[in-house]
Length: 66
Image (tube, one colour):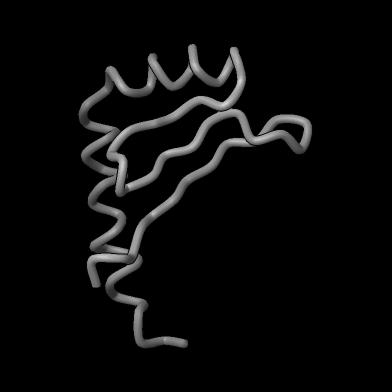
């Protein structure tokens, strides 16, 4: 179960500009605007903790559903 990860991506005009990956533990920006937005989002530790908790709450509970 260590290889399961939770990914949350943000898109604008069909272009991914920022992504949260539970393995990295923070937002990563893929465009200039995405990098700035990721820096802002990474400062909010409560949102980061909530997204990290989604791995256990959502992913691990649904492993056997396939």
